[in-house]
Image (spheres, rainbow, N blue to C red):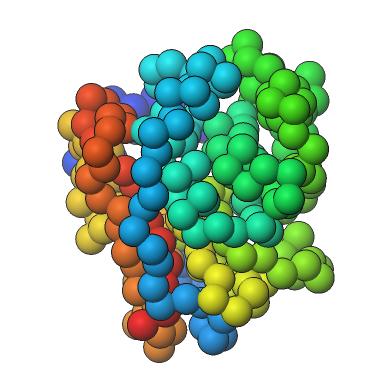
Length: 262
């Protein structure tokens, strides 16, 4: 397996993209058809509000530059501004990781709001992803911000969503990005939305085209939504595209996208 991984890294990026797309397409084809109830999903979203307080947020967080394994600072800013614009009070995040987006949701909502964040690993444990890169854990970060509005859950995303009895204004899908997993997650997420709710997705590459200079494409989320649409799900992807601030690799492009009802 190590030899295979090394060989993959040596491939030209375009060839690596094609190989990953083939693998994920095969895995996705093996998943039974899922039915979607899109009745709770919103059709629209508001224009983004002013983010003039962002410099204060950056100083509080001490985020600067891109951090390994974290949502880039430009996407963090977008999560914060979008959450405020939508005025949501109940958020479900799939994929806590090092807490880059977790703290954005928590700060944007404040204590009147509630964030449930789910990850398959113990993100706050000694072997968690934050500790591995020398950062404070998500729970420590939340405490440092003086917040008490976050519930950390260790679970497989689909297991949690199948048993959850809470309903959410916004659900952020940023866990496993494989097409077969996202294909299972989206119908479950739709079933957990409050009326007029919204789904935010990370690493969406429209039409499987590269977004940045490295040429890399993560195909899973787009492949999953494409199959759901071909099967009749009345949803559309709204890429958030270019932003008024820097995101990744010196660009202002984001891979964040909204899933909306047609």
